[in-house]
Image (cartoon, rainbow, N blue to C red; front, side, top):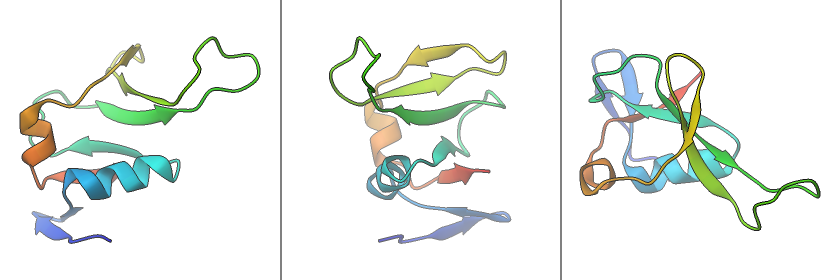
Amino acid sequence: MDKAVMIGNTKCFDFPDAYRHLDNNKSVARVGWHGKGLKITMQRPDKNSKMGTSYLYITMPDGTNIPWLPSQTDLSRVDWYIVE
C-alpha cells in the first residue's frame, strides 16, 4: 500500500502505488514533470471500444489525450501524486 513521502505539501508515492490508484479510477501525475496540467489515467474498454484491454493515457494541458507508457525514470521516482 502507499509508502507516502511528502514533497512540499504534496503526498507522493512510487509507481506501483500510482498504478494501484490508476486501477481504482484515479488520475496521477509526477511532481518532477515540467508541464503543468499533465495527468495519467487508465482507460478500460467497454462494449463499444476498439481496444481489447486497459491502457494508460496522458492528458496534455490543452485536453488532448495520448496513449502513454512510463519511462525508466517514471518507474523509479517517488514523486507520484493523485490529481484531484
